[in-house]
Image (cartoon, rainbow, N blue to C red; front, side, top):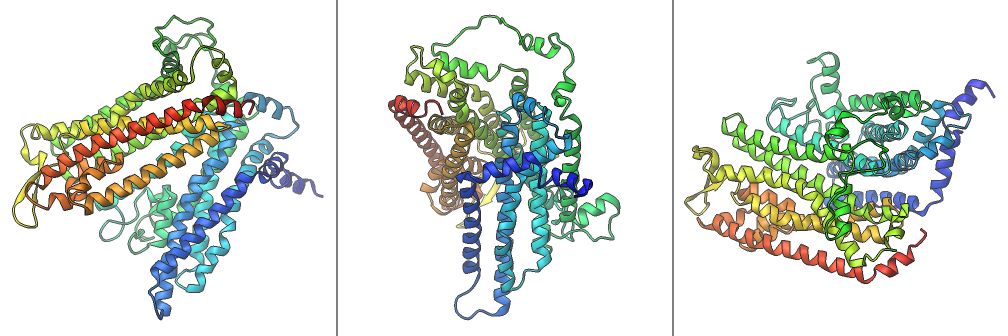
Length: 621
């Protein structure tokens, strides 16, 4: 065999690391279940879409082609979404396992080259994601039997999805090689991917709604389209509703991004992946970026600023411990490093400054009312989503992490009871999250306070005149004045509910990764169902609808900012409809908070009762 060909095979199919990863993971039932569930979801969605978009009786070829095109669009979006969700899950092992310095010490003693080490980790873990893509190819090909789906669209959608998977994999491998992160960065990595996708979609929607996109109405492709896989797919599947720029209208990089966003996304993602792989190759045998950047042996100024001392210090000043040491430990240990302190208070400070800036810009006339409501809603939704993810991550690893490192065995030898242990975990985590919860409460509260003061003398900025269909009109606040109070009443019990579900899965799971996945699934399925019920009932059910809106923080926050749109049946029922809706929403918020508190207490009681049995069952795992 030629030497060059052997070298290429060692980089890819015959790479020892890739072979080991593929062989070991292929024996796990979890991967089989994920692949089966992936295909099952796509098949069910395609079947449901075809049945839902095809009229009964005799169907013409035109109607069949239209149904096929619509169904293909649905499963194309779904496939990109599933790939973006599953890619971080498959690639998380690269961060959690290979970030262990002992693993790297053993790996670097082998005669493998730097490029073989990096590509082996990347291709071995990326194999399963790409296998999911190719497994669904026959299903996509079936849509061509109905017509309306060009083959190039199928190929283009696969290229966009593959680009997203490769980029996520390259980022994960880079984090692993850099040695800058550990196992706890897995969830941060996942959150960052989801947050980036959601943020770019929201900004693109705002730009399109304000006419800053391409097309005659300015509602088409924006400069963010080529930076998001969902938007790139949309430009392919909806060229009329989401038009691209004329290829001759712009030149250079701008023309490339606006005229061919799908091609630009694929090019950018593969190019950035190649750069990350190249950087990882250069630093993999030098100890990573962490070793290269590690300089002085003294105490850095930023650690002295927060009174943290040196990294390897053996003594620290005494601290006042709470009555429950577990609660104090959970709250204090989260601020044990400089990075955590900066990230926590940066979130609080930037959130508060952003809220004040939005209100100031609105007051001086730089923002119209619709933009003000949209920005406040986007800020609050994003902040609550991130806080819920942080709560889920910390709670899901609180017990499972201590079981893995042996800390739980030491705690069980102390006089600490199961109730003190679990209640302390709950109290400590919620106490740590309270400053973060204050950010969305302050954001929506300062907007409501601005309306309560009558726009600081400008009533036209604080109220909107809404005409009642039966006659008359009512002054509706831009943001309800009680928004901050109601948000605080519901958000604290809801975050406590997220923490309690995380503790439940953390106690009953063998590892941190499985507990995180289980907690995320339960919390977001429950909150999603409650949110959909709240949205539907608030718009369609008078009187009771505003109370049911408070079942989920998302639907409640939406109703507090846009009461006319969300509670239209109650608001439009009479001139006093808005007052009725506000009273009903207040009562519903109090009742919903009590329900969440009752669920937390019930789960805590059940965990305390079965604590000894569960701990002994998982002992040694």
